[in-house]
Image 1 (cartoon, rainbow, N blue to C red):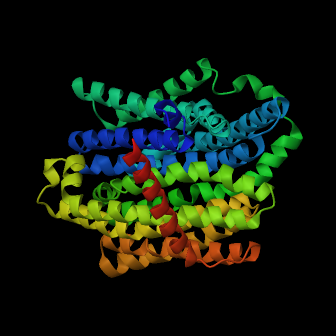
Image 2 (image 1 turned 45 degrees about the vertical axis):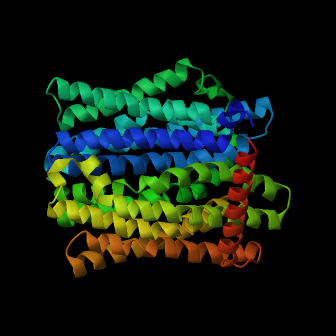
Length: 448
């Protein structure tokens, strides 16, 4: 296979996009840990966690529904879907702004600094990123993961540059960092508009019928999109208000390295939906389940060496991110333990994520919505019980085990009604598929 063909592979481009963004995010986080106090770091991560949740809520209404109704359609239908997506996204953003405006007059009555910063800046961030979010939907619908990579990397690169300038001019504080975040989103959105990637010219191509189709589907798929963020928000709230911003900064440091499993997982989840939808649309139930089981099994086994290496190298990796001030400290030891416990639980992540996207593909998004509600209740109970028992962030980490377990159980019950299958065979199939893939790859390599 030629190099150019490999570079056009959607799995490779998706992985490069999420991987490139995550590497840059690592760099940004490492600089932050060296330039802000632990308390300010906690406030920043509180803000970012809640902002990401609001953004994922908006994207949850859009991305999966857009890909489903846009892929393979006629040019005219495609314009209607783009215009209708713009309409829904603008409406959601406007609602957030209208809710936020009156709150701004009462910020002086909110004593918690973390919450104060969030309420002050979240709506303007969502407005500035709107064209960028629509552009990301379009690039996924057209399988242009190269463009998606450019958009993601551009935003984070700009943020790193602005942070570097703030440090150079000795103006690095929370307020200026918030401004840098807004400007980086605005600049990336303007790039998407000027490059013609945002589809804003099709805004008036919207139709009431298409808007209703997207909204009716999106109101359920939003559950899948926000599920991982929702539980992070719950953890963040409980840690911030019960244990304080400093504990939140340590917790975030321990969780930061989880990107080594999240990067490939997000990449393959993004490319799984078209394959699953195609099999479903052709009426092939066996193929749908086969694709799901193959993804779950292969990626679970592929995670094993990553988890072992990550577990062993955790102290070294976290010292790179957090800086020397955490080396040999209790906070550093806690961060290492948080990561080691979390990464073991990651073996359950593929089952959770790919069963969720399969439910969307087979027109059962309402199950994902119900599942998220159940998981939220479980997460709240586990977090509160964990803090009560352990009196520290370890209680939150241990409680996280119940989330993927709950997700897999609920998803499995629903998918069994669609098509009977053995969940345990998933790992046998994945092992055989991965072994075959490695064998073929080695065979091809030896012939060259």
